[in-house]
Amino acid sequence: MSDLVLRRDEGGIATLTLNRPDKRNAIDRALFRAFRDHVAALESDTSIGVVVLRGSGGHFCAGHDLKAAPHADALGWLRQELLTLERLTRLRQPVIAAVEGTCYTGGLELALSADFIVAAKSARFADTHGKWGLVPGWGLSQRLPRRVGQAKALEMMLTCQPYTGAQAAAMGLANLCVADAELDEAVLALCKTILGNSWHSNAENKRLVYDTDGLPLTQGLNHELMRNAGFDKDAARQRAAFTAPGAKP
Image 1 (cartoon, helix red, strand yellow):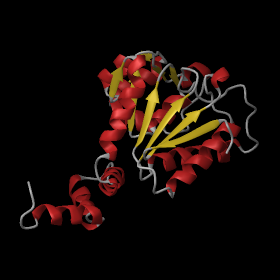
Image 2 (cartoon, one colour):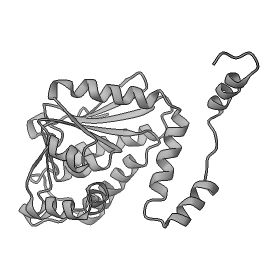
Image 3 (tube, rainbow, N blue to C red):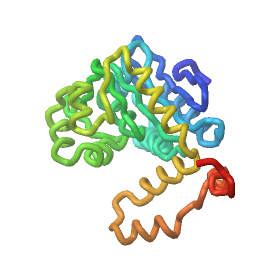
Image 4 (cartoon, rainbow, N blue to C red):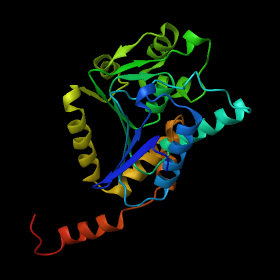
């Protein structure tokens, strides 16, 4: 694996760290290939229950590296990038973006591909596609309105203005905002809370939510019933032990 994306595993948590600190972790093709390899590896890793995504050097990600030469097949490569972010979203493991410092444009799209965003007070979120005459290609026009609502999403996209970590939490973009010195502790606490529940239930609850996004209620209810993965076998054994005669409450 390239050192452009670092992976550290501990206690069922895999932490992926974008590692171009001199570029505020701006994404070029080499970094993205390394990131894609890590996502592919996590898809089949049953030892990991939560994935944390963060950046090195005090910044999350400044977005796509605009100084990088364009790919010969620009549309084809863009589709590969989009599909990789969708694979990140579709991981069985819950994904948490731990954001400090810059989280702009493509970096914002990357954070939006996670299930949770935990922001430090130093975080600055912005969509600056409009500053460069660009339009989103990594899902921002779809994920941002779903997270913050259409009006707020348009405000971010059309003004290109930055929003603080506190503002991001207030609008629902971030799940919570904490002091920079407390970011690691807050992320770890969230990870432990998630890991303390059934990994099977976590994965299936996540799948049901994403699979039914946009469906009418009746269809969603039918999907939940007919595409249900059933109980966690370990949880079933725990329930049996709990309800056994003589079991202590």
